[in-house]
Length: 145
Ligand SMILES: [Fe+2]
Image 1 (cartoon, rainbow, N blue to C red):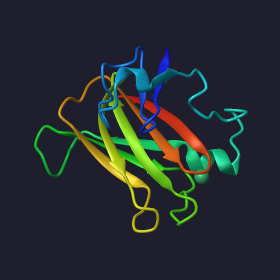
Image 2 (tube, rainbow, N blue to C red; image 1 turned 60 degrees about the vertical axis):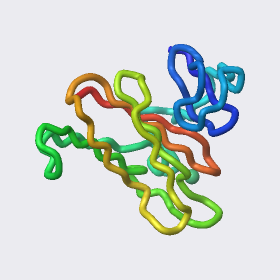
Image 3 (spheres, rainbow, N blue to C red; image 1 turned 45 degrees about the vertical axis):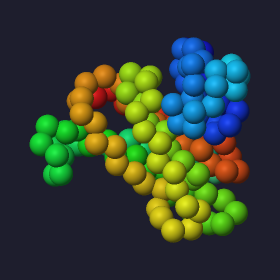
């Protein structure tokens, strides 16, 4: 699927550029198609320590303790927890359902662990998480609900 990157906030849209960025409001002309917007492990069957620190780990819990009927999606960066330090941190995590953006979680460099929970109203479809490391770029993970 084609990817379009917002030149203002780095948000990725799938399929086509939107009329305006759903995250920062930048106009359509701010988007650039970029097939290489995401980092990928060199060998998916043999992940390096660097890969394991960046690929999101998604856990689904269909029994939300806060909202009846809600589906919890926990996203942790990554299998080896990524550092959150002034010079190197996970700036944000974008969450999508069926390739439509549903949330951005923006994080301070040194105040919080790189873990978020999305509370989805619908418990069906595909969830995609993209994290943005300020040093190592954007990494994706997906899960079918
Ligand atoms: Fe990193």
